[in-house]
Length: 345
Image (tube, rainbow, N blue to C red; front, side, top):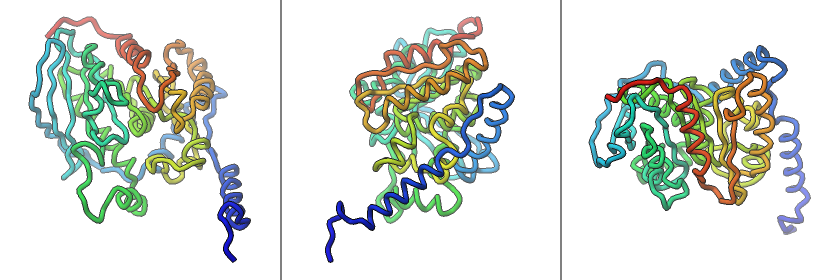
């Protein structure tokens, strides 16, 4: 007997089972904020767990062998196309901006796009959802590296049987994850920034939207070289995003929600400076959850006696976009707080 899907009691039973599993299983390794010692011990355990979730990583780092080509020179910056190696046989094209007429070495920001066909190009496009945030940072005196992430821009996958879905699920079946491969690419991006004489190694930040925000969260969680992180359009909650509605596959990492909610992932950056960007019209990542996370995370920054400016949020009336009005000044302020007094080179 044919039964409409909406009226199918057996189907509803499965949904009920799923919601019961979500309720029983979510966030089994939440942050501990009872004391500094307890929090730091939790961080060590949580970082080890997150590394396991991201999957296998190369045991050694391949030579970067960057190839650089100047494509534009203005009174504010030099723009180059750079291609560097992240692991044997894998290269990443990126835009590299070096500021002019500023004291060097300067702060640097790794700028990350999300699911955008144009990849790195959209980070410098004022008409894109990124509001040219990478270009704005370059014009304000930062060294900027904006790489193409796997699947986008010049790293779009060729037509063939191994498409994006096969790549994602195939890596999961083999002890790897696509997010883990992307994460390692970004570790190597910081390696590259550290080789540049124009970069102050102690003033490196990361900023990104959507997938770029997710990667910002994971990179700053695990790599202490990140001194300030701005996560746009991601840090909200698993419960009201990836576990509750159809969503991007990039957020569905095996066991991630079993151990952590978004607040816990963000807590792995603390007490280093962290800023969230949230649009009230962004249905994919609810602002209410972003605000709740800031309230929860504030306990950590208070525990470590960090200034209020170290944890911030920009709530705007836009959708899934980077607003830039508060996030960029915040990033510049954090990276310039302890700038050394040095002469021009």
